[in-house]
Image (cartoon, rainbow, N blue to C red):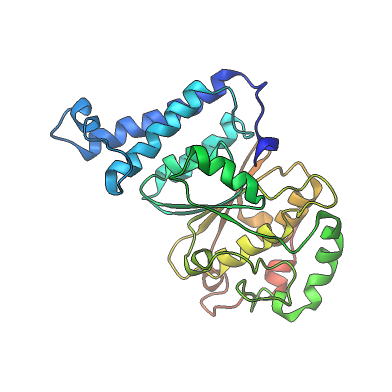
Length: 292
């Protein structure tokens, strides 16, 4: 995400539109939360980030202020943002994992204000830069084991590695499968994620990490889910070859429910559901993908 994902040349109305989305959610939630008090009275209780409802409301207000006064806007278009926005509003506060950190991070955190939102970023300096202006965000620096130049080879060889097999795949400590992200914080492995947004790491030059590991690991996390319901996976930049190819290989066309612009939205069921409760999915079920 970082600087590459934001364009000052975009019209200011996009930032205002994002602020409007967040503002609308804040107004509605305030009326629901405080049925017997006026909206102005409910706002009067906001304090300086001491946890609970005060801190969650504060991050929403910070997001509105940021997008209403800045002409640095997210890379995603309003239509693309709306896809994730609609899903977030259809769920209770949830676990939301975001690959990438940037000026749009305040938006995502505020749209899931009472949920658990964590950001993963490859550039430690960029983490410091963003958190300096938005210290309430929860972000971690992570390192990737791959480079974009390896994408074709990884795709053609991963099936020969048993620990990459869909029927027994895992992420934490899976050093044999090069696509597995083994360097994530423990809390990422310990939680089941309701939404996963993949808009990083960088994938536009040969030495960049590429998003191969993020896409593979998101698919494994979703299929290992024990909670009821699907995992929503949002992948940006599907106009690029690697993103599209890896999405079709691991997230699967049959799970694609919506596409807007350069964003695809997948709903991935747990492996137990896909295999009739056995807890395993055969290679043919996941690896034999009908490309459309």
